[in-house]
Image 1: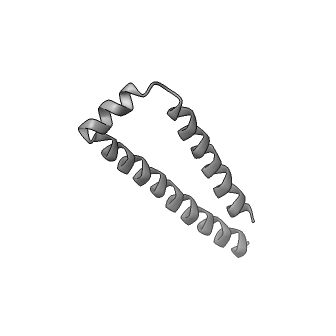
Image 2: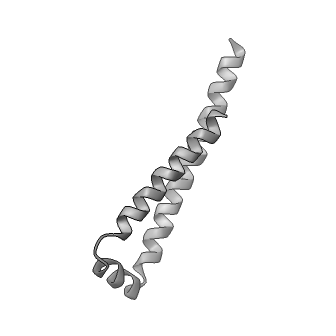
Length: 70
């Protein structure tokens, strides 16, 4: 249950960050979109978030195994 709660908290935090970023001036995003760089930025962000999630789930598994061995 804690895993699900942590994932939801992370997703909601990410969602609010994205929504706050959209309220800023649209000039920068228009420039990046016209150059095609926005796709590179989004690919990097998605890669980093995915890597962090995979790392956290692996770490959680290791911690559960250590707790079970006690």
